[in-house]
Length: 501
Ligand SMILES: Cc1cc2nc3c(=O)[nH]c(=O)nc-3n(C[C@H](O)[C@H](O)[C@H](O)COP(=O)(O)OP(=O)(O)OC[C@H]3O[C@@H](n4cnc5c(N)ncnc54)[C@H](O)[C@@H]3O)c2cc1C
Image (cartoon, rainbow, N blue to C red):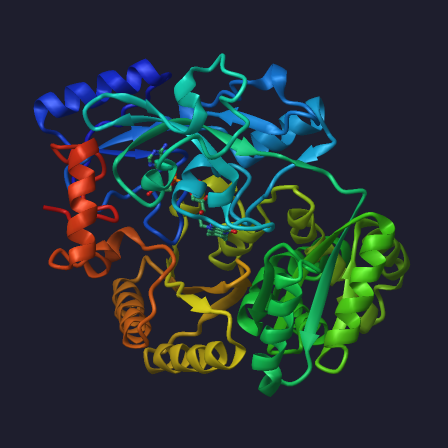
């Protein structure tokens, strides 16, 4: 790929000037918020020759002085990160929190939401409204009631506006560059607990999914319940466990490796384990936990996780770490703590640190993941809420991956009340060209398996847009027509969820 020097606008006027100049020169742009779209292409544009537009310098919480419990909306620019919003709320309004996702603290809220990323409480798409966009003609367009002007009392509170909702046009599209948007904040509930359920028999996966889906529909567990396979669960815990054994138990080398493997065998022995959240008043949470236990008790072993239990468990187990079983559980607590924080709105780098550790670069900070040899390709189908169907389909994907010598890292996310997504990735050493080729072949075969079942991915990698977008289909032709309204010269992110030309 050829690259031009990155452009770094500081405000919306800079973005307008960039777009107008690019249009005059017929030079395509590729805009990103923080560019940490790992597993989907990171900062890579879909077609060659784009000038990168790095929006990370536009990082104001524009209405900082107006955010409050009674006004739970942050008007943010694209460079605002999870860590920044978290810090801001901790200092200014700790009674509010937000839908945090498992990517690093330095990832954006707007870029993630625009690519329809998923947080622990639900799809990020639902968090964003009232966008300000610079279209491919340089027009500044405001959606919802922001069109009435920023001084309108409705500008940042009523998400729908009047007439057709244009917001949806700018998610997973290339119709414009989003320069600010409203992001929903939430009142922090008095009690928040995590619920982990370890499925006893793999053969019960379909029934397990159906029960968890019903708990979601009934809003007993209203967030996104994650059902991880063993590869995913163990890889999420591996770094935390190893780090504990190394720093707290003095293990090194082969003993450390064996100790970590042994600990994982004790704490994560099951093929499928779910993690969900319950929040509310003490009484609501107790009632919901009883309901979950009653419905899943025959299928799974339940564990409730909250800060108090984690602290207590650690205080009891850590001093007894000379006993292998107790040591394994103390290590598990150390590993689970940052992941549990996600459900209560605290961003973490732990999942990325796991990858950096696995690929021998624990020295790198999370935002520099792309400097390691970690190769990652996401290939994540959206799925119907049907346990038997999902189980059969996961088997089909696993067998395709096996034919290519790959293990799949899968989390089945119960994302909406009527559908789910199997967030699935391949991991490989990208410094070895044969490994990269093998992973790409495997990803292509998995995509063929997805489409053969008349399914689709929920989000596409930059390198697969050519397969996803069929230039001859009526649907994508219509999308192209709409694009020409906002960006007649195809200046912005050509080929991204659109016909490349
Ligand atoms: C270990 C790990 C865990 C992860 N966990 C999650 C997770 O829990 N949930 C999740 O959703 N993802 C997850 N990811 C994937 C990914 O890293 C995140 O989605 C991340 O937030 C995307 O990067 P970003 O925020 O920098 O977005 P960007 O890279 O800035 O943008 C994403 C896309 O949107 C477009 N875009 C961005 N900003 C604009 C704009 N202002 N106007 C127009 N278009 C724009 C970009 O062109 C790009 O294609 C994970 C990845 C890893 C490696």
